[in-house]
Image (cartoon, rainbow, N blue to C red; front, side, top):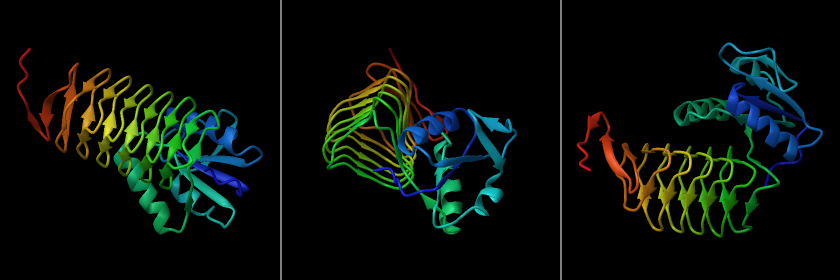
Length: 221
């Protein structure tokens, strides 16, 4: 699923998420020249890959044989950078580690990252900019909307739907057919057994909603 016809890949983001993207890119695209760009303060080189400048510098590198990947964990920031690059004509690719297990019937949008040990099962549909982190599993018929982030060790049962910009924290579980609303957050180690509304935050086993938008919700034990 990763585009192997590239001569150069520019990774936007030189922090921790950039490091894991470098490793996946090296596994997916052996021999491809790697470069980094970052709009903040960072080292001139990360894991042997040079930082060539900021996003403006990266835009100057757009060509037919150059791909781009946005290695930014924050969903909203990743989406904003992706939109800027797309409007400039950049070729945004997905990176799927060869040690991930991916069904041939699964579908990915541009800019998706699938880390080693992840499993994507039959007819799962991942929109653009989704992150499936190390060891996370996405079972059959799940639908992950734009710029969803699954942290390491997350397990989604069959038919789960996660709305755009949703974040599922490390080690969390979601039972079958549950809908998690857009821009929602599931805290680390939680077990979700019922639908969550948009812009909610839920934690615990079973997960309870503690916040919706800017309003705190009372939780009794």
